[in-house]
Length: 629
Image (cartoon, rainbow, N blue to C red; front, top):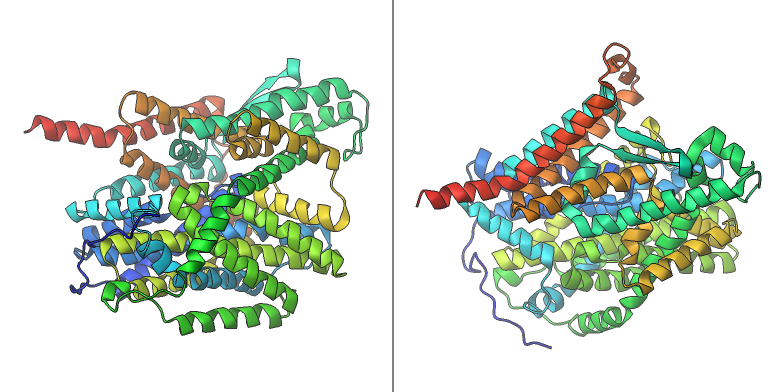
């Protein structure tokens, strides 16, 4: 292993600048709530979340430097540290907690209340921070130059670039405004459809693509390659498997369906066949993909755990830039959280369950923190860790006699906490890497992480209850794909209710894709999601490809698309509020004004054009600068 690389932070240890201020804390809390809510909405729609660190850094620059005229880079860093916690809490929440709502609708479990969701999110988030703090010296300091932490390093570069005046915040805010406007036109005023659909009668299916800005933004950020993998999974499901079932099924009744295939197609079309059969194949593919990614990472996981624990007790210097939160404080936080999980009656976790959380939680926090340093947050197999956790803990609960509604609820609660531990630990390590490069005070950042976790946890319950009340988890508007998968896994182990033939077909599809050397998870997610979502993501990826071919892909395009995601998420929450209070019908003017399919196409072309212009913006600015010299 390489020797520890000597590091000189941007702000020297002996220099004291504003960092943990009222302004930075309040701004960070607002961003934690905003990005947490936006990512919750996005994740419940398509099963994906987008890192909030860089957009939060850009917005913090715009607020701290642009509006408030303050010049402390560490203050801006504190804003993004607190703000980025919202995304990690949202990711952990939407992966698992909606399963409790789905069981409640089936009448097998009580509805989770605001307090229960808050406590699960808070406990998982606090443990994620507490488990990561003792590892900072081993992972961030001792292995600087070994572990690159891609997002953390990129975030530091963005903040350093902001020393020139907060450049880039305008791209984020303009994206937010445009996405909110399109969302209002399609889902609020309803004067244009949110999707384009073309029947393909010869194959008894259809091609469909949504025009929502967030999906196009996701495709642009992911790039053409990852988007094409997802789209390939969608094509396999909708143009191979659905036609095979619809054409050859005839009058056969296939489990878990209860009517003949021909009747199912006549009444519900290709979507009914997808819902009854393909989503189970997709679930098997996603589960297999998550486990495969986890198995492939095992050598790295064990070496990561060993190296991290080896440096666990090492201490840094006494300088400002090496001062961590006291280990006794983190131990007390962890102990209080464990007691709360055990004793609070609304969360059915036994003493053995809390022990399971401590062991698996610390293990996966260590793994997540180190793997994030190697491959980045986007490639960190948190879903695979959650699937592995659910399989093991559900089996143990069943063997111990804790079955039925209580056993399944306990399994999801344990899985939720561990999922958040892994997600928050990875985010915390990225933020601490940014602070290490800039010269931030670790203890202040760590307190900021705790504040961000608390703020996001306090908001996420209200957001989830609101979205469920407006559209319902499991509906077409909010499919909650990851949570539905986790629910099926728990039920499959606990009750044996899964159509295992379909699930194993998905498993072997995933294994075939893996043997071809293609990343299996994007393809599996594409098979699991409706085609209209993956097609929209593919369009965004193609826009990115076109921009790169014209050498016009820039950070402005990424920031603009991040704004599209945030803007649509916030607009979606606003529309959910209007739906809950019965106001949504009052703003629906579709009977008075309708743009039809032509208007939908115009909106799609306009969004693509704006994304391309945003991607070209930075290059055009650079060309003008070069010409003036």
